[in-house]
Image (cartoon, rainbow, N blue to C red; front, side, top):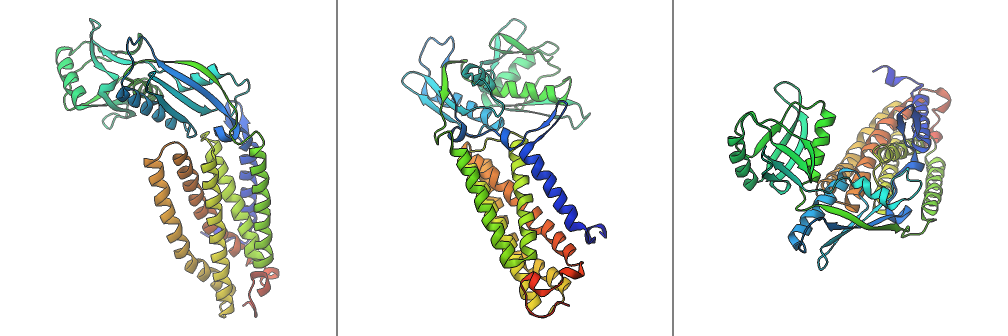
Length: 422
């Protein structure tokens, strides 16, 4: 605890902020380990452009029904959400039985090859479970959900299958006849797994055991989830999409952001002095954290996502203004400097907490129930508000308290107050 009261804490936090900002802007690569900087973010179609691909049913001698197309669309969207591809447009051509998908380039895309980009979406094949006689006992549409986890009994990796009500009946009947035999899982005609049936499975829940690792269990789970299509799909007629905002849009947005950030910092420095300096560093820490939260998982940054970043930065400025005003009020009321700082943060916290917690609830709801650009907005907003708590409340308090330990900086005008600081 004494460490956090050190008079040099300001310089420690400032150094960490500078290091994180450099990491967020330029990235880091050591061998196979890499953290991509802001220049290698995955930007949305509106900023960088992307790919348009038309998916058609494979080996289907009829036009798919609307419900089948809707099911395939939902699975494609879920798969793209899982890959953090939030800027996309998946539409259905009902008359021709096709699905049109638009999504942005990867951050490290260099040759802009549409066919290569489409492969990122992975397999779009039909999933089947077959007995030793090659009879289909279960289809991908019978699987409601799958996920990988460590077994509570022995901590070994397993894949959990959650079946639909109809799938549960089929699987109970099949496993009752196949105890001691294998059920093969095929993606089209490619075998991806062949677990042995150890007992009759009832209740619509099944485990696939004897997995090599948690990573391989997750890979199998992803394959099963992606194969829950009502039919196989093949990509055709892929082509390049130009940025909808123009190629210079990102440059203009970055320039506007730099100018706005500079003007905010100038105002904070002139009006609040030392608390203003602390606020500028706290805002830099918040921005660095948000950039890393986007670049590390390669979360697609779209215009709604940028709006979430801007809104959360505005809330960060608001938090620092509230704190600075509270400290000034306490000093003018005659409190000692340390007492004013502690009282200022304590009184400001309730206002900051109330405002931020409501935004956090909304952001979480957008992430849970939203998709695409809504998910992007909710994610950037949530990351920004969390960083606001870390930077605008915790880091700011450490820095201001640290600066107040220097006798040369204890003058009232340095904190925007009048009178003599005790």
